Image (cartoon, rainbow, N blue to C red; front, side, top):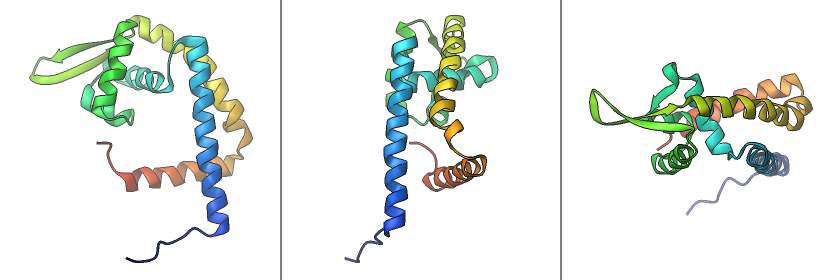
Length: 153
C-alpha cells in the first residue's frame, strides 16, 4: 500500500476553510429559506432549475443531473414539493418510462418571493466578502472540480 499524498499546511488550511465555510453557508441558506419560505436548499434548487427550463419542465433524469441530486433523492424531494402544490409530475407522451417535473404557477410565485431573500443571503455571506478576482478563481476552480467529478449518478 502506498503512502497517501498528504496535504501540506497551506493546503490543509485552505481545504478546511472551504469545508467549514461551505457547510456553514449551506446551513444559513437552508435555515433562511425554511424560516421565511418553507423550503429547503435542495427544494429551492429544484424550483430554480425548473424555472429556467423551457415550459418550466424537465425530465426527472435531467433534473437530477442539473440539481446535483441522485434520482432517488430527487424523487423524494419532488414528492414534498408536490404535496405543497409547487411541482407536479406528468408522464412523457413519447416515452412511457419518462416522467416530467413541472413547476406550477404557485411554485413559480413561491420561487419569486424566495429568490429575493436567497440572493441577499448569498450576497451578504459570499459575494460581498470575496474579492471579484477571487470569486472568478472560485468559479474556475469548481468548474474543474465538477468536470473531474463527472455526471451525478
